[in-house]
Image (cartoon, rainbow, N blue to C red; front, side):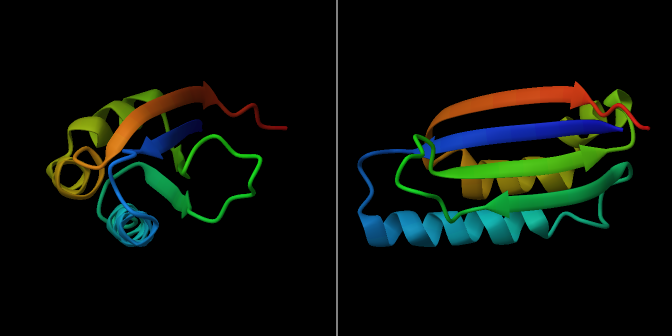
Length: 103
């Protein structure tokens, strides 16, 4: 199993109300991919954060393998959501991928 975690910061040019709508759309779009992409076993977007945070939202997803993660990256359903709901609104993206050690 492979974890794929991303933290985004939204562009400063958006108002607080716009940012809330953007986060809602990102959450709906990405979580809506569950069951549509082979090898994607879990996907959750966290939009509520404590004031100590320096990111605006986080994607926490799990894949059956590194190959499944690679396939997800180019899958048309994922690319559509990323191009429509994520990329136009985010200023920064940090990512960490790692294998989950079972046992």
